[in-house]
Length: 247
Image (cartoon, one colour):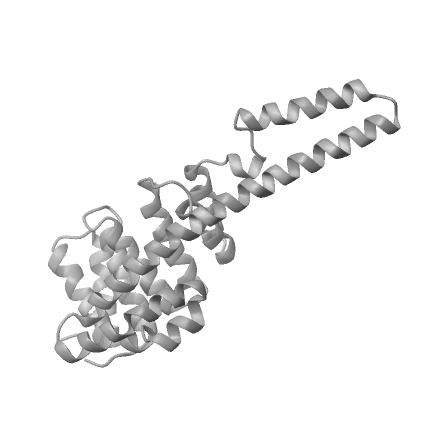
């Protein structure tokens, strides 16, 4: 099977579109060639998605750690700058004692875990804001909120964040990235509540890419693993089967 989906998983496309992720993704190029020759009629697309999603997960974890360290450094620098400004102001206006008190209070707040208001939002609050932005078709904000939860500590809500990320990418018509994000959402909880919708999302984005053969594979996987899905899932599945002209 040669499809659009296998093409967008090729090395040049990954390196152009993912930046840092592309470097890791290049490592799967030889494996992709071997799989294509060994099983052209099988589930090649879904196998490749598994491999790329594994690399994406590793990269995401490293990026999350880097982002956390960067945020810590920025917060420390901001705290230090504020202390210096307060001390200078107090010295100019003859309130050295007050400045000293302020300077002592800032490290104490940092020690107790105090953080800017934006950082205090819980994953639930971030996801709520992201889904509201999605409904308003503010896809960039929805994407940013989803990525914020994904870059944080591991939790069950990251499945919802991954699904929100896939939806926001689809809204921006970034169908290749959206297909991967949907499949990653499925892989995170293959028996979870989001799994049927995630597989349906994979099929929908593949149809948008005109990769009908791969879309049919995703729909077959959906019907095989979830023979009695919710009515809305079943209805949408039939619609996409017709669009993809599945047998």
